Length: 203
Image 1 (cartoon, rainbow, N blue to C red):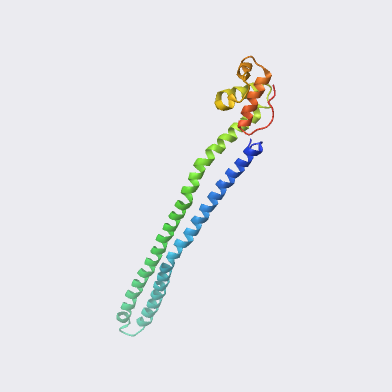
Image 2 (cartoon, helix red, strand yellow):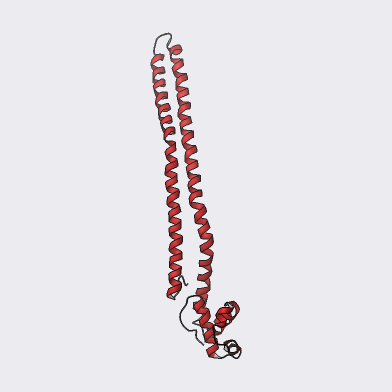
């Protein structure tokens, strides 16, 4: 499998494109992590609310227990403390709900921040990259085959831009029809150059 071109100019372009895609993705992932941490700081009031509610509930339960030990009127005296403990537990629960909501918001924002730019980059870069790898791998294999030059020459005639074909000698196409080895080699080399590959195909 060919991952990179053999010609320096094409190889350099591929390296730059790959590094750009990686850096782009890394920057947006870093931005998503940073945003997640910032949004998570909004949960601090909820944490304090939960802590205060939990501590208050514990104090009220303890006060209720102590009041309950008062002879004859212990239950009546302790009842308000039990109600206060329930209210404090509700406050703690509200703090936990706030933290959960902020955590969910932070997660969604982080995924959107990183996901959209990275997916856009992959949608633009990956198909082109995979298409080149597939074409170059096949061409590199074909150039080693006996008669591979004819296949590459035919590919060049079918897909090469007219301006590239026009840059060849005027008799190349006619020579290809007659099986002229020189014409076949020129066309095959044109296809290999298009993919950034070196070498002459075997005739």
